[in-house]
Image (cartoon, rainbow, N blue to C red; front, side, top):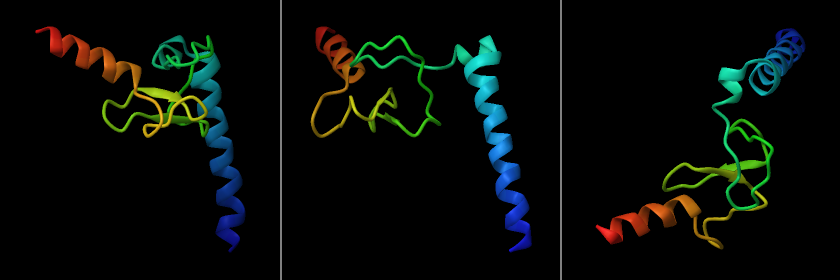
Length: 87
């Protein structure tokens, strides 16, 4: 139990530093983020954020509140299918 008392704060600190680096400090890392194609929000989203989800077919990233694979078709999958059907 003593180890957990030290480990949890340590990991929380590491996670916080990595989030800050990726989301605010490093242009290269920030550039690897995505935009939600469904709501067209201008805020960059990342897979480690708890309010995001991936399409199970193509792994495109969306807000959980915008995308449910059982309710709405993935825009990226729809584009890919349209291109395949034209060929």
